[in-house]
Image: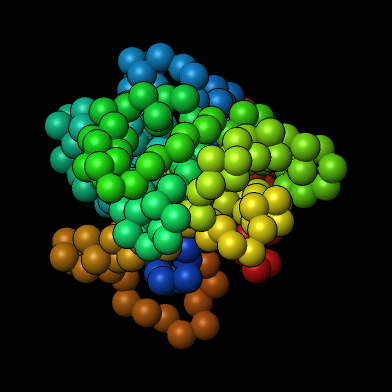
Length: 252
Ligand code: DGL
């Protein structure tokens, strides 16, 4: 069983990609929506939430855990790997593919304040910023939009524009989605950014990495033709919004 968690519904953008590659697996998805957002919370607080969630996922039989949250990956994955005898797959903002493919040499990163401060991100950034200008912006209000199921329309457009316009003004031709909530706003981001800007979501690469590690660890379930996805949803707050988004990705 694959355990997967986020501060809220954002990690469903990673589950969506995992389901494409590994539809035969059982999943338990935990949304910590009673404590969402994580983006500007103290890393120690996030670490403790991650421990509690990990223990819950292990008690449900998870054999591997996807930290489908960039902020939690930055704050806690090293600790989780030290403390629990299970493999953890984390998020990595896609700075590398963006930097290597950029034609203008200017790339944008949208992420939470926590991710942009975490040493994991700062190390990656340090590696690429010699050759590439990296412009960052917090996706202010994006998480709240997604948690409220507002994925398009005038309010989403206004909120997204406030964070995307400064990147466009700086001349970016790639925008990295450094928070798992943001792919649910991808259509709006792409509309505002225009056809010359490529938006990059790391979720497909994370799903591929999950599949590789599961194969190495002998954790893959045998393929069952026509099997329906088996997903348990657990939330720390009200379930409705995560349930709606889960139905949305299942209908896709
Ligand atoms: N979805 C999360 C991330 O990838 C966290 C957003 C938040 O809770 O602030 O960073």
